[in-house]
Length: 201
Image (cartoon, rainbow, N blue to C red):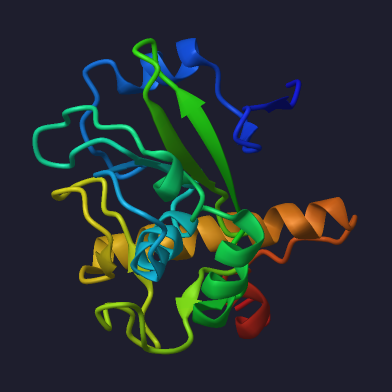
């Protein structure tokens, strides 16, 4: 993908057609969070941590009213607060291990501009919140945040066995992939050999 630069200086990672395709009839899901027009706020770290624990990560679109889904867009002052390096520096103290995400601006057909935060999934082990804080103290130390595909889309602490199992299964699959890339044998569980124990009786 060619890197495009908006006149405001933001990197554009999504074309207008791609944005329109994403927003057409959009509703929030486990992999898509819509936020109203707002400046950057560390409270968004909770959504970033939750999406990092999804199998394929997710996206947060800022500039869409999150109840009516009305398009608002962001003004210059709001856009100016979304500085990728500063955002990463502010999120890093809350994430263990670190979270990979990118920030870009996208423009719809009406000329309204949005910030799109694309969150990558964790590489090997799930992301845990390593300290409490946030603008409204919404981040709690020791919590694994997640967006369940089976409940109302929201970034919340893991609260069910099935959600925890999903996260553990993804982590196990990633570890096996890592072993294979390193050309290491993936350990398999062996059943107990009753014949050998009985000595052929």
